[in-house]
Image 1: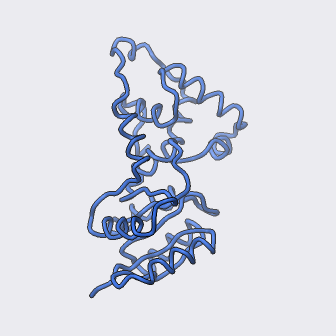
Image 2: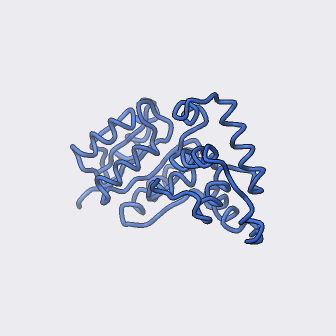
Image 3: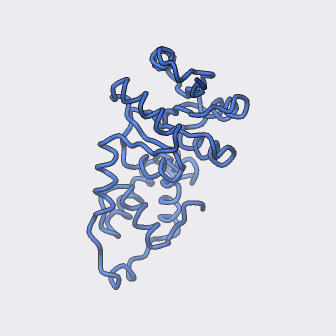
Length: 218
């Protein structure tokens, strides 16, 4: 039996060891490499060409979202399963845009994780139930009148903030990128929410994408 070759990208050694032990008990999969940050994940993907990368979001050097984007751009055949403690709305859309095959939370049972690995390896997409509910909620959010939409205008700076949000950057990272304070970035988000009538980043990002104010690849 040809085994599913897995790369673990997780900065916490104890967590990584736990995943490795779980996977090692399965006859159809094996861990072929371990990365402690996003940059290492990219490097090891190039060297080892795993079938599946299990990727955390919050890691040093480069976060899992940026690493996922890079890996998928260079090696589109590699399937990436996000396994993280975070279900923050600002991450969900960024992960989907990064073309990850799945998004699971670390509170899943071991058997569910193993099934998710097999699913993404076979070409399926998997989402933790709570993630699915959030996405559906946002996709089914109320529609606004197009004439009202036409009157809404975001400033160039607000567009920049949203675009960096698409890339999965947190407020501190956005502030650093734009040479602003964290408080100023928070103010921009509040103003954006107020202008377009939403209450979260993913709603703002989806709204801007739907109205073609920004593009995923910008």
